[in-house]
Length: 449
Image 1 (cartoon, rainbow, N blue to C red):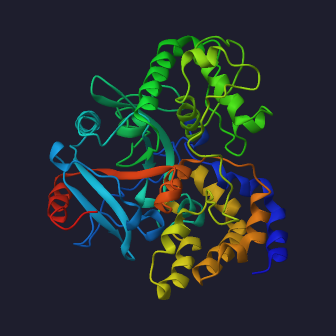
Image 2 (spheres, rainbow, N blue to C red; image 1 turned 135 degrees about the horizontal axis):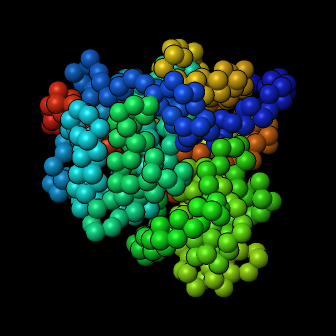
């Protein structure tokens, strides 16, 4: 691989390529009005497969290494079947799936999600601080951009109340916030199709922090009408390339502290808009702090702030590092060596772009010329090259975009070696029809990690 030739391609469309690092969780205003999925996903039903061995078809680049599936599930405590949905390419990577039966229509879809949220919270499958990623299996075989994003388009934050799980997401409005029953999750019967697959990712935080997070969420909800009403302090941020700490010229500690002061209404003037995964990241970092610590914090920010993971580069340039785009690579390296060269091509191949919304299709087309440098890095690693061999090229890419925390970042953080993970993959919740549920029960009889 020649870093100099890679850089010549990179610099031609720098800012466009930067969108790859953070794009996700688009709102209705970002999409054309004729699109069914306003968060930028596909229109099809991704929970389907003609294979008797899979509930749905997920390629390796939408899957996690089997070795990363370690979080125990207390399966007798919830009523749904659990199965290992191996990837199309083989059993080395896949998804641990909990299948939930749903009926037809918005009311039935809402009911299924509320029941899921109550039953899985009671069983410990959903906990305070968990990240729930909107997952679109139907985006496989479209374009490199959604493949690199691993089909994830939105990040929500879980909190519990009365023994049930709820979600609080940016945008902090009725289209997203609820018991996984808002239009983004359940659909609205008209212009939003909802979503039928959710990854559950668990940060490695203490139970004390989970309790503290729940208190911060409660305070936020109590004051949200004023915070995001006339004052519009933490509205949605649509410029995914520029995290809040970059746009404000601050440190992440300062922006986390600022969010805490806004929630407590100590600060009623600062405007700190955030995209979905950024809001979740800030709330997790804030969970290490008490109200008193935030009240006492000075201009440099509260020393209690503890980010679960640091904002990430685009791709790893050193051992022990992981990048926003590295999820498919981590799964690729679990495949047999003889399959890897062809597998690299699958990640970066152009397929049926019609499955993408207008917004995501436009970004995919814009970043397409930039996929060459990244595919060279993946190809070299697939052939056995160590990170040191691609470090110069990776650094050239990383230097052009600020560290970030896209929705996919949470999944990528859960895919590496146990000792270096900051997050853990728990499961993928899927909502299926009657036939799909019957199939899930049969597949659940097979071994499940």
